[in-house]
Image (cartoon, rainbow, N blue to C red):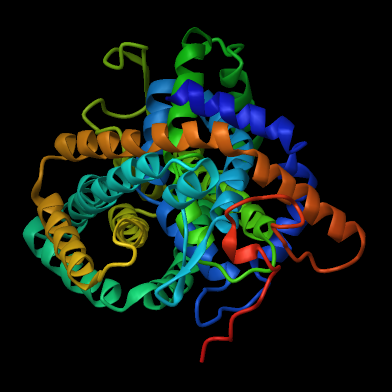
Length: 469
């Protein structure tokens, strides 16, 4: 799966002519441009929901694991996979917008929709929707809830069951409010949590400013196997950097297109560019923040390829690989602050991810129950998700991670295969966007003019919905 995902990212990078570099200015502009409507959310709200899903336990635990098992060089390969994955994120998000529908008064879209409309394979769309529903409502939320409970117990000695109860109450109050409430909460929390986390890493960086050249040299020398200590685990550096990078930024997983499809935009490529930039925010900023805190303070061990034998022992071997590395890094500079900081960070990261999971599950319920009443299925979805979150807080962490991996794998394979078969409309949309930008106009999409079939929403060109009250 990892090799397939990497290969697709490289292919899309060339097909889009390195869109992730050429149009980075447009990415930033489109990120804050546009307003919500009665049927859709703003581009920034869509970005916030997508980042809610991308920024989770992988940014803290996953980055630490990459360093522990792949050495400092794994950080470089995480950067590379973010760069490559941004092209994949553009393609899948743009497809989500092209084939979105106005269903039940709001925009719906995602892999299930573009599989059915773009490929004409309803059966395949149903398989994806069922897989996504299982993953997002039952398999994946347990992992995030477990991470929250573990960090809260470690930092504040809070009983996991109490943490579970608090999560159920907070989450229930949000998801019963629908998409608009999820979007409003996401746009309020996500920037705050990301900026706060990055600021902490900058504080630690400035407290160790003299180490900047040495740390960067260590990352690059380890990444290419020229470092004397880490040269022997070059393969592990690449494997863990790529693996954790893909898990964290979610490019190609099929999660981002759900939020992208809900945005009110005049051209699908606009949201494709926004979602490509969200990969950079997730990995280049948030994952790097974790890596810098750990590396600048030397708060890590590195293991041989067997993942048991120590190659470098900077700290006690009893320190568990994961959030404890970040906690120790913060504590080394700000004693006593590490555990609370990591616990609060994990809470926000994982909580918003569960919110995003719910929204993705909701979209796939809507897909499966089109032209039928969805009140009872939606209610059952909410109940199942809340029960899963509660039990996730009291499960063993190994079981939670295994279930999370299973849920992720179900979606990724199905989505990646569809992207290989259905990339052409996304490339056509990019060329159309760039043509209009060169003409000095605000790009507006018309699927009929481009010969894209079954994109009913765009057949007569863009018609803006009324603005939300």
